[in-house]
Length: 75
Image (cartoon, rainbow, N blue to C red; front, top):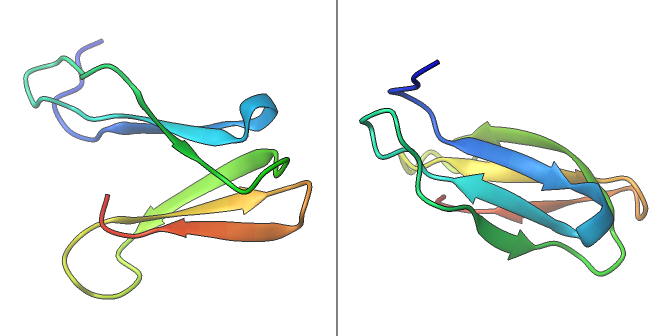
């Protein structure tokens, strides 16, 4: 399958981070970039949207261990 559109974001439950593979737009992705979440948070879900209406996507991460969220703006 070739993806020409969206990038990929994943929650890494056991390592307290999220990984993002940005799409080059030609069916390939750059190597994943890791972004840390709160210590011992166990991120379990991700939602992407423009929270602050600045035309850039933001990432909301649900942390199951602390029952809170992390917000990453402008990704």
